[in-house]
Amino acid sequence: MSAVPLRWLLTLAALSALATLSTNILLPSLPVIAQALGGDEAALTASVLGVFLAVFAFAQLIVGPLSDRIGRRPVVLGGLVVFVIGSAVCGVAGTLPWLLAGRALQAIGVAAASVLARAAARDRFEGPQLAALLGRIMVVMAAAPGFSPLLGGLVQAAWGWRALFAALVLAGLALAAAYIGIVGETLPVERRRHQPAGALARGYVVLLGDARFMRPALATAAILGALFAFFGTAPLVLARDFGFSALQVGLFFATSVFVVFAAGQTAPRWAARWGGPTVLRLGAALAMLGGLVMLAGGAAGLAGFGLAVAIFLFGMGLVSPTGTALALTPFASQAGQASALLGFLQMAAAACMTTAAATLPGARMAALALVLAGGGLLALLSGAARPAAVARAS
Image (cartoon, rainbow, N blue to C red; front, side, top):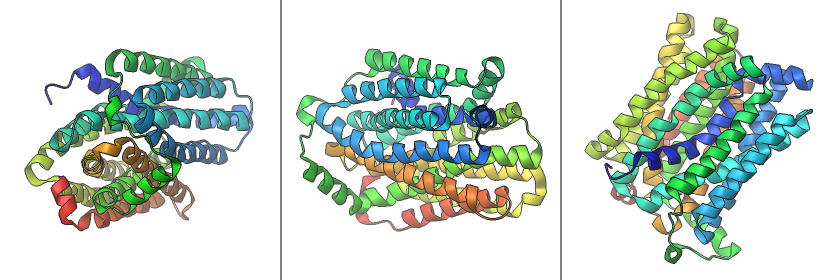
């Protein structure tokens, strides 16, 4: 992995992180945005997150195979252009429908960035090298969900909520320049796949029926779905149950980054020692334990909540890079399509689990705890069986 230039790794990490950055930077400002646009805070939060996740999920099914056909570079750059336009629409929106239209355009753009960051890594590496690279990308991109609420709170306090979207416009332009100058095209012409629509559909059917892909993909989707539920619900828990201000919510997320850093550094070393499937199962078990600790430790106050979050995030940090590497490694010839389906499953799980955490009856902390534990359990069940094909892929 020493041969991977740091700036190359950072660019792929930034592309991967753009989706969480463009959502989490808004979290502290959602009450202000709801007031400005004349909407209900809960309804606005659900629609802003729901529209983004739904469009993000389905857009990935298109951009992945498109990049397998025409190359990564034009799809990434086209996606970033759409993202910049969507961010500008959000920044000038005067009504909720215009804000949602801009969020839909943002989602299309980040779908291209996120899918093709994984595909570019798969274009260059495989096996343990791919797992290590994905782990290091995750370590870097963990700063986005960790620090973006803090950044969002500071920007909103200084210049107002519309400045958040101006910052996202600048981020999209900077990423486009970095991609052109640092990464460029990673899929040679001779490896591109010119498939008709029917062949693309059959390709997805084949992936859905292949345990080498589906077991780690479902495990990763369950864990990341629970993570998005955490992003959407934890600010409400911190504000309502513990009296946190927007700045304090941002600081809480920022400190959680270090747990993900530690997991991302640990995952490739443990995978090299014990194998990817074992590390995936261990991470899933820890994620489930974190949810159970949160469920049982509500009376312990902020300390109990923080401990539960740390356990869950460490487990998530083991599952995410390991499961992604296991899912993509056997499919070099269709890395874009495999990455697209993986992303679709992740965002579909995120939409379902975020909705569950917001609508389950009872206190929000208990609802979040059930979703985190359930995500860990689903990931554990998905990774529990170890067919020979999956074991060889590790």
